[in-house]
Image (cartoon, rainbow, N blue to C red; front, side):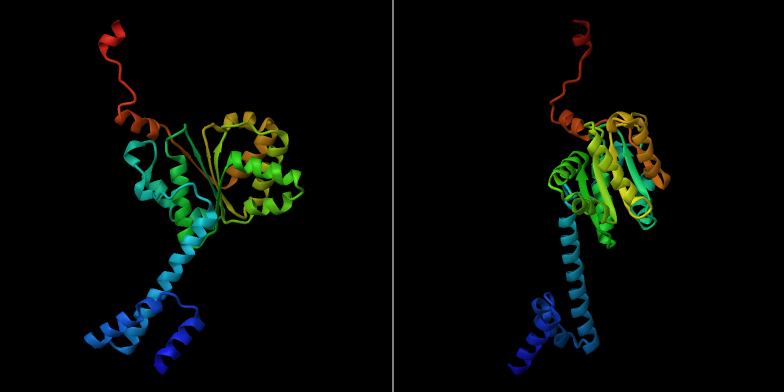
Length: 259
């Protein structure tokens, strides 16, 4: 009992949480299979390290505010032949994050832009990078409220500090002058110091309309595109595909067309 108490005290002192759950099982296994002391200790420590890493990933994933959990393995590349799978797999190595480069995913709604950005975010978290996800609409709202509350400097840090900032759905709503100015500040502060993954349903030529100022849009694009990768996705919406499968869309027959 004295040894048990000393072990529990030592485990508690070290802050271990997985070892207390497995130590007796591994001790019995070691005795039954004549496992060496070093192998027994190695098994315990490896389990503790894995548990610590899993907790870290869960915490970082929660702090990233991802809209859902979707991986590259869940992405249907066969449905979007315009996407070069090898290029996406190469991006998943996260070299572009290590080099503070940006990734812009362009295409119509529903083609998988957000799915890809979330999948890359999960890979980044696994590799120890910090990530923050926001939609363009939420980003603008957050900054406008912070501006009114005189807390804009603190709030800007939320978007400037992470290794990877994901801004989803640029182009669905036009920004006013103040919002466009803050957006430019974020892009400028992150220039060559952090990566941005950005999704948009608008081509670069239409960004002057988004920001209400062609000169400002050019300045934003100049910084975004200097060190960047652009993926143009062309194809049908996944959501429409699923609706078709469920029978919500009826294909016109020849008779329908001639009536």
